[in-house]
Length: 126
Image 1 (cartoon, rainbow, N blue to C red):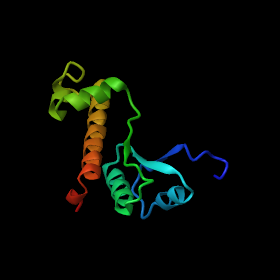
Image 2 (cartoon, rainbow, N blue to C red):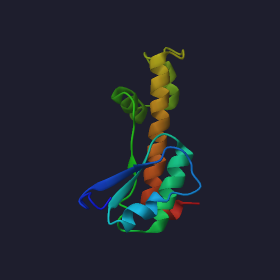
Image 3 (cartoon, rainbow, N blue to C red):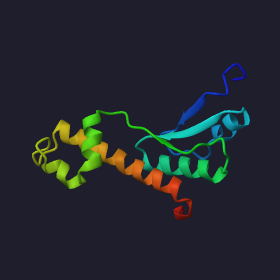
């Protein structure tokens, strides 16, 4: 770790819920700025984001929300209502592969919206 430039910003991914997140202490103590990175597991994203923001460490820059799927699915999900996805030309009211991808994208979009909302409005955290 000592050989890595402190100019690097560490993106620390945790997808699933955990009891604790030791990396939230390890990286800042080693002198790195970091961003807790989350994906579509909303509980995991919520717990990791809340743990990071509770530390109030200036080296923790805030959450990085990521998506590992087709850009079109994410864009559709960001712009359309979940119910519309099943009625769209991609779904035709049936659970086609394209409709399933769009629905997964919607879940990720909702996780991202919630994660950012919690980071920007810490008083809303339960």
